[in-house]
Each structure stands twice: as C-alpha cells, then as structure tokens.
Figure (spheres, one colour):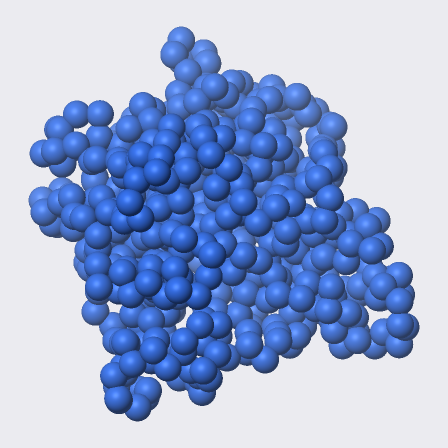
Length: 557
C-alpha cells in the first residue's frame, strides 16, 4: 500500500461521507414527510422509501430486510435458518442496519457490524401497482475476500442499474471464521456464508414478485469474492434452481485453489489462541462457540499457514468442498469434475476480468521459486523477471505474475473448459482496461500504478456518496454506459448486446470447441475501453505460457 497525500485525502473524504451517510440513515428512519410504500412478503410487511433516480424518475428501496434467524448461540457456524415472521407487523426498512461483523477494508484493523445481522436490500424501479410487466432481477453478492462484507448503499448504490428497469437485490452474508469455519467431525460442514447467499436467493424467488420483480428472470452477479461465490452456486444444483444467468466480476472458482487450506487445522489453531487445552474437536468447538464474535473476527489473520503468510491476499477462511451431499451442501466435488461432465450446464455466464493487469499493491516478500505454483518455479521466474532480482522496481512484472496466478489463468481455464465441455452454455468474456477518474478501488486500496486494477470497474456500475459526478460528455460517462448496459441487457435478454446500438458491433460469445477438436483454444473477449473492441487471446504470450505449464505438469488440460 502506498500512503500518499492523495490517498490520505481520499480516506478523509471517505470518513466524512461515511458520517454523512450514517446521519442520512437517521433522517430516513424518522423524517415524517417521506413517501413510504409498504410491501407484503411471506414473513410480514416491510416499509421502504420512494426516492428519485439520477434521471429524475421514481424508484423505491427497502433496506436491511432480514432473511434468516440471527446466526447466534446454537446457530453459530451452522446453516442459516429461514426467518418465519418479522418481529413486528410492519418492519421499518427505510434505513440501513449494521452489516454482519467483519474486518474493515482496506487496513483490516477496525471491526464493524454485529453477529446477529443477516439481511438484504431491494431496489425497484416500480411496484406491481405501478405497472403490469415485471422487471428482470439482479442479485448482487458483494466483494470482501470472505473476511469483509457490506451491502450498504455507501459502497454499492445500484441506482444506475435500477434506472435501466432492473430490480436489484444486494445481499449481506457471513464472512471470516463465523462464515467459513469447517469442523465436519462435530457437525460443522462449512460454507455457512455460501448457504446464507443461497437462502437469500430462495427469499428472492419467493418474494421478489411483490416488489415488481420477475422470479423467472433472475441473474446472480458477484464481485471478486462474491464472484467466487456466484461461480460455486453456478455449479451447485441446490443453488442453480433459483437463478437463470450469472455475471462474474473479477473472480471464478474453477479450480481447487479457491478453497480453504487445512480448514480443520485452522479451526483448531483458532481455538488454541482462545485458550483451548482440549485435544478433541468437540472441545475445540465448545471453545469457539463461547468466544466473543469480535475476538474470533480479530484473531482470524493470526492462523495463516506459512504459505498463506507470504501471499499478498490472505484469505484465511474460504469455501470448502463438503464431505457429503446433503440438502444443505453447496459443493461436494472439485469444480473441474463438474465442469468436465459433458453438456450438463445450461445457465448463461458473463465473466469479467477487470483488467489485463489486475493491479494489486503488495509487500515484496521472499518467494521460493522452486515451489511456486507447484510447478517449475525457476521457469516461471525466468518468464516474468528474466535474470533480474525481484525488488521494488519489479512491481510491474510481479503484478503481471500475481494477476495471472490469482485471476487470469483460472479465468482462461474456466473459459476453455466451458467451451470444450459445455457446448450449450452461452458464455461472454470481457476484460476491463480503462483507467479513468472512477477507478476508485485502486485508489482506496492505495495502489499507485497505471492501468485498471482489480475491481476497478465497480464504480462505473455502482454509485456511492464519494464517487464524482461527471458530465455526460466525459469518457468516464461513456464507459459507465457500456458497463451498465451490458450488465442490464444480459439480465433482460441473456445477451449483453442484443443489437449494435451500444458498441457499434455485437459482443461475440466464446465459441464452443467441437467434441474431439485439436487441443487449441482461442478466447474471444470484449475489451472495455475507448473505443471498445473485440480482441482474441488477450495477453496471448502469457496465456500460452501457462497453458503449456499446465499441460506439462497437471491433468487439467
């Protein structure tokens, strides 16, 4: 992280805007002169607020609707239990309640939220009383590396999407050890956070019609860790029945690299840090059940394995492959096996690698190049760095290496597997390379590098109080229009460009590979920049280098 004057100024802006946002929640909760529509759902009735979109049209929001019983006490670590009734006949959902407890990015020092809080928010362009036609629905799973999660409009205000006639649901879910601890010998199967997401999808299926949404036209969209989650739901029949398309922004989960390392040992280490003297998993669980949620959240970063400690992205608690298929399970097989089961998937997908260079700021660490990637580490080092020493002025090459290891290689592998083994999946691939004034994620994380960074398309799609309002003739406005309309077109029609009016051409899907064809793969991809264009095989030299390594050292290809 680069602590510059510009970064400090941005952090001060974020603090001021956050305080203002919290004061606005008080206003929304109590101000008597707002229009407050009431919608009846299965658990009771919710009261929201009618407001204005950027174009002046009306829309309605209903914030922090609980969809699960609070996951506390005996429900800690376990699958969520659906909420049967609200605590009062009409629940005031005009303001935001606290998020689920998590480490606050980007410093991972502050702890926000409460353990009892699992909720979602609904934003709709019209209610059933205002029109006959139902709107397509986008369910959004936020980012946060499985250790943070917020669905607050402070970070993800979906008014640009709603303005296109789409209902948006933003979902909060459990993260950290409370969301992804796994101790199966004592009944903790793991993936509680993913099971929260699936329960939210079920809630949407049962209730979204009351908000003017079409439960038969639901697109699941995930950002970063939310995209990893969405990918796993895409592979899970228990989840897939609740949505029809998937948008993956800067993340996929096609290999076992996405899963938690030594999950049971992590649980035991965490219990020892809390003073557990016992030797059985039953005693470990008893210790963890009694621990304060804030302490569990705080200690999660202290139990990384040596390999995780040297990694720039220390996602300690992550999804797991569950032991046994049950009514609650998400995934019980490696993704590779599911994807290679020929012609078993139908759900359309639209993944985005948010840049040819997914810039991450990192602390340079000692890397054992003989074991890196569990392949030929010396060959990898030579490819990216040549004979140069890896040091601070090697940031660009190291960024390319981390981009490929963390995002691009698996994104390409996923695209190839779908093209080769799932011929009936219509699959649109893109990369976001534009670097402009709305590339806030890179700025917030203190990344001082040129080029688009990981998640840098976020604020071309979402609004936020700290995001600049730019004129309609600006390049950023045009990029935002492309990002928003490709998403909403995909949600409406299953095609991001049903005609040529948006881009001047149609976005071509990745071509299926005929069964038994030669072992080559060309990746057709939309590059989101000015002008936008279709490209074939972005970063082809790096792509083919990794295909060669994978073919020579694994059975993946």
